[in-house]
Length: 457
Image 1: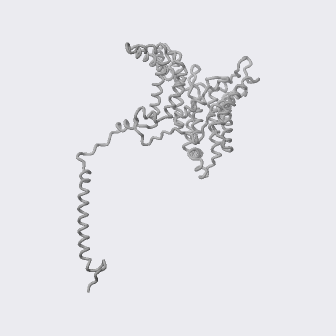
Image 2: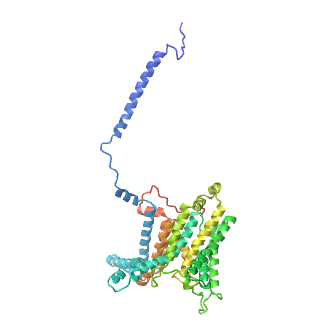
Image 3: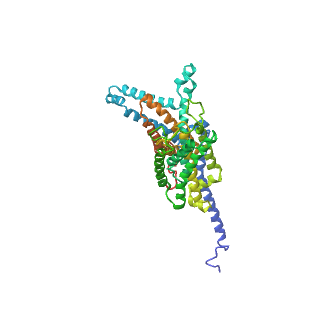
């Protein structure tokens, strides 16, 4: 008598199970073939694949993407456009033509174009190249000094900005916001000037001592907020801002002291720096460009090497990226903070030295440093806190300042417009999303448009 409930492995169930399994496998195979047939058909294109785009096409496509170069260039364009609008608004004669623009639009267009084109033409002629001076030199009616004068002025204004820009950029890379470049440059100019007219040294050695004195003064003024940040946790922004005031008032007090003030003058001005301590001019006495621009290029290379090629630079960048992780990896964050501010102070002090040892001034006055420390912040931002970018940004700002003088003299445009242009450039640089939205830029694959450059700020 057979078992009514045979086991699954018994001979009673095996033939039926094997037949059913074979049938199920066949059905599944047919369904899979039917399902994959449309995919195979879709995988076979009706035409040949498109060829790889040419190098020129790829360049144009990538150019109109939200990368750093495109955003920076378009920021300059936007600043120029807004500056043109401000010129038109601030000129009553041109603005009056818009009262009847519906009847005679050509008057408004022509007067606006004349004003803006002449202003920017004079900006170009005063900073880069003057075609009229070049033509006069070719005809024998002028000298070569007039041809090189615009470039000379641009380099003269740019040299101290390179140093202060590098000072701010170096601190940024280390996670610190060095607002105190102005104060460090002020102490640097004081030390350089004192060494320049108080120490009786031979030429060459006198210049070297004066330059080193300026660097030492900046280093001391940078060390103070550095040690306070490292030891007490005091915020470097507050400390450096306060030290800016201290340095400014110390300069104002020092100038009128006996032994420092020029005995032949009653106003606040010091003795003149000896000629043996002044930076030599590169293109003769008639052009102001001096060896400070060569020192600026050398400093740019040194900072680039420090950041990218040295162990200290790696530690600096690691602390700037994540102080806690750097501390865990065995890096002394305290030591790094102090060194960052000392190096930043040295660079700013060298920038201050350029103001009194170069051709800008030869004696201390309350305004001898101008605003090179605060302009250095703008230069660092425009240069994306990278050394060679800072150099290019300083050249641009130097060109704006040099060309602004001619623009004011020949076109009657206020020199303050140059400051507005600088501010607009930085505003658009700091807001890449705005530039991207205005020009409908595509997102760049490797774009890293950072607006927060200092850790914790």
